[in-house]
Length: 177
Length: 234
Image (cartoon, rainbow over all chains, first blue to last red; front, side, top):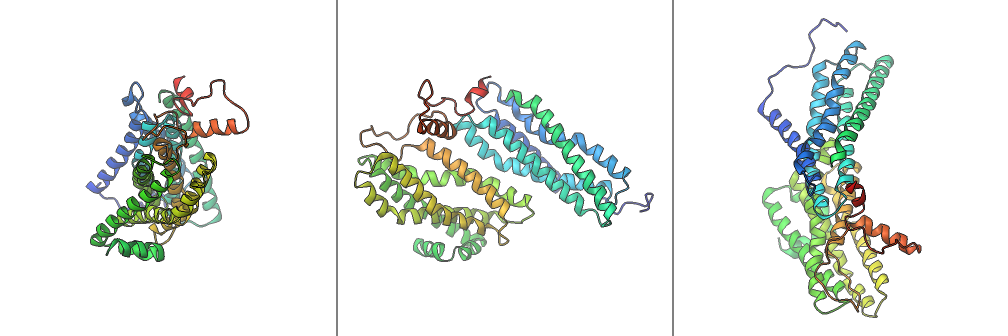
C-alpha cells in the first residue's frame, strides 16, 4: 500500500442529518443518565454518567486505535475508522434513548434502577464496540492471513482496553448513582 | 376491517396482518382494532381472575389486566427499533408497533379463550397458591404464541433483537404485575384496588424463594426499597 497516496475515503462536509443523528445520540446518553438518578438527592448529577462511561471510554481509546492502525500498516483510512466509530456512537446513543423509558419505569417503581443502569451501560457500551468493530472489519479489503491477523489483534486489544477504561470510569462515576 | 376480521387474521395469519400494517392508512385502522382487542380480551381474563375472590374484585381485576398487557409494550417498544438497527436489520416503526400490538393482542385473546377453564377451576375453591400458579401457567402458555408473532417484526426474523426485546418485556411485565397486584385475592382478604408500592419483584421473589425452603428473615417483610435498596443506601 502506498502510504503517501491519498486515502480513498470520500471527504464531504458534515451535513445536518449527521449532526442531528449525533445530537439525538448524545441526548440518548444524557437521558439515560438523568432517569437513572430519578429519586436521588441530586438527579442532575447523573446526567453525564452514561456519557462519561460509554462515550468517555470510546473517546479515550480511539486515538490509540488510529495510531496503532496506521503503525501496523493496515489498509483502511483513518476516516473510514472514524466513520465506523461515528456509526457505533449513533446506534448506541439511539439504543440508550430507546432504553430510557425502560429505565424510567424501574426508577419510578422500584429500587432496581442503579443495578439496571450499570447493566444497561454495559449493554450499550458493548453494542457500540461490536458495531464499531464490524464497521472497521468491513472497511478492510486486505484478506491476506497477516492482514487479517493484525486487524483482529488490533481490534481485540482495542476492545479490551476500552472495556477496562470503561470499568475504571464507571467505578468512579457510578458511586454517585 | 372490523374487529372480528382483525382477530381472525391475527389468529390465522398474523404475518399477513403485520405486512398490511406497513401502509399508513391500514396501520391506523389495524392498530386501533388490535388495541380494542387487547382491552376487551384482557378485560375478560381479568374479570375471570377476579371471580376467585368475587365482588368488586371482578371489576378491579378487569380494569387492571389490560394495563398489565399494554404497559410493557409502551415501555419496551421505543427500545426495539434501536435493537434491530444494532443487528443491521432495517425495520419500520409501523411494522414494529404492529408486531408488538399483535403479539400482545394474540396473547390476550388466547388467554381470554382459556378463561372458562380458569373460571371452572377457580369455582371449586382452589387453594390460593395453586390458583396463582395456574394463572401464571396460563399466561406463559398463551404468551408463547404471542411472542412468536413478535418475530414477524422483520421479514428476516433475526434472533438477537427478538430475544433482547422479549427479555426486556419479561422484566417490565413482572414489575407491572407486581405494581398492579392484587389480581387473585384470598377469599378471606380485604379487597383493594392496589397495594402500597413496596420493594420490587426481585426482592419479592427472593423472599418467597427463601421462605419456600424454610428460611425466614428476622423481620418477615419485603425490603422496602427493593432488592438493591440496601446497596443504594451505602
